[in-house]
Image (cartoon, rainbow, N blue to C red; front, side):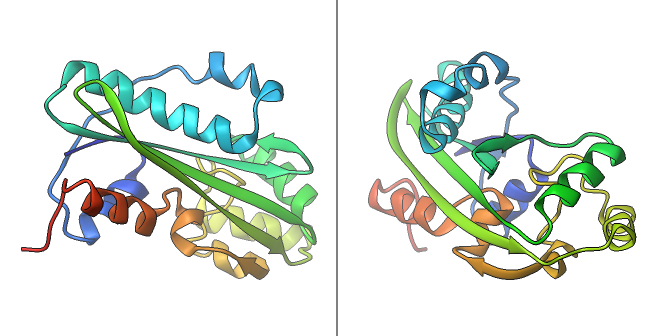
Length: 192
């Protein structure tokens, strides 16, 4: 079993449920697919990105089961990228405060260079109204510069929200129950 993801959170999610796996980064360039974002749904985009990551590693390790994953954050019909800078994170949180946005996470499983399973989930989050002071304090505390939506829900980011509809694991970037169910059904993992 291989996880084709750089995400430390996804790595820990799989490790914490007891899976034995390797982590190999796919080094996949997402920009070419993201340029076509207006022509496909957000769900298809997340699935495609997850699929391409897994497929790339599957070609190098065809005998392994390879999991690719991706997450996109959507606010007012626009994809919100990882902020990378404190200024951009402040700008994103300032826009989203008091409003709803959507987190879509997807996975794909490849074996013998073929797609054998995929899935996605979505979570709707409503952010509380936040003062500029609270936004800056939060960013200094969690440093969410590499996180979709400019928050780390799994750390202190959950305090930013007044309502969440959907799965907690999905917010972290992987629809874990759906993935595990598929791995059991495909007999990739079993109870021991």
